Length: 356
Image (cartoon, rainbow, N blue to C red; front, top):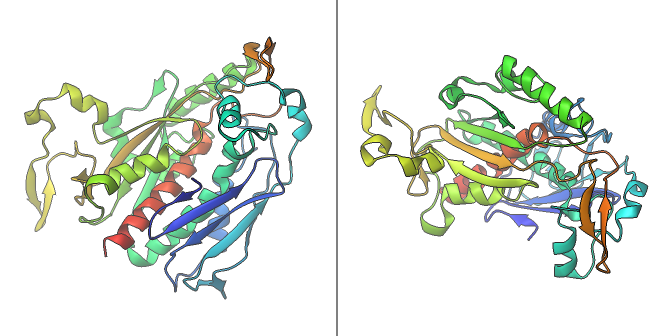
């Protein structure tokens, strides 16, 4: 339940307000030079407190590697690492000890385990996505050697009513997305999104949105059929992110409105190579990559922790109202972007290794 992957596996551990969080990455190829500064940069993109549209929690998110590296090179043995928590305000959650927060995992977890960590959600907190970004950075470093052409670009494509034009997806770059706080590659739209989030924060409310991911340079033939399809593995990973509510690849649900003559991707020759005239399939057919760019989208719900009063019940069944305190993201989408990229890299590397 805390492990992702088959040949390449990531097991994460830790809670939001515990002493540390971390992970063990097993099955990672040997001989990969680990650029620790690159890993640090990936972590900084996800860390809290990075802008006025994220939580005020301040975590340095410095990574400590415990095993699996020798002189900065992977040895092929498990890579274990930890990230220490340094800015927990557990007292902010004391009054929630006996309350079930609306749309949180509190009630479900207590029913499942008979106990729950009320300090920031414990294991169900988005804090636990930090180790994913460490492992994802390592996967990208592996691809620099194994598939140098691979490029993964994720960006905010929707926040509330503001959304990018899907026809421009292939024109967007990581640099464009990283140029603003909301990670939207359309600068004008990004300003509207940021203003909207700040407005909702003042109203003590929150908003959801979508992250789009584009994978370029993955060769054809990566993936597996039936229950281990490439898109199924991506979907499982993405839906494991906190607040993720939906996944679609290619034309997704819009395919239900299309005819076969509209949706089929006709094959053609391009510079001596087989390609397709369109990419309604999103780069995957039969669970296996076809050499075209992989394109998918992940939907995220509004942050359930808001300052407005909400009706709830206590552990002993008394109805009451609550207004959350503490430090929370009014919109999780901007910080979810690097998590989506990291999980994509991990899934692709696992599938790449299993396809060789």
